[in-house]
Length: 96
Image 1 (tube, rainbow, N blue to C red):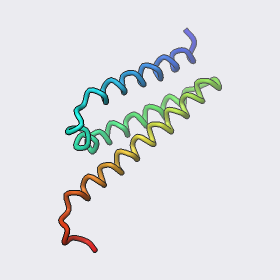
Image 2: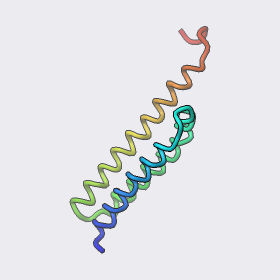
Image 3: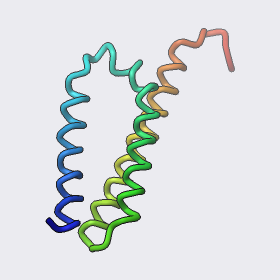
C-alpha cells in the first residue's frame, strides 16, 4: 500500500470520526466541553504537523497542509468560543 493512500485513508477516517463524535454531543454540553477539548485540538494539530513532516508526494503534502489549517482553525475557534462563554459569566459591574 502506498504512503499516500495510507495518509489519505487516515485523513478521511478522521473526518468521519470527528463528525460522529461532535454530532453525538448534546447542545447543552457542547460549550462547556469546548474548553476541555482545546487540549485535544492541540494534540490533533501536533499529529497533523508530524504527518506533514513525513509526507513525500504532492497529494500527501496537500492533505497534510489542509489538516494543519483545519486543526488550527478548530483550536483557535475553541479558544474564541471559550472566551465568549467565560465573558457571559462575568458580572455586569466588572470591567468597563
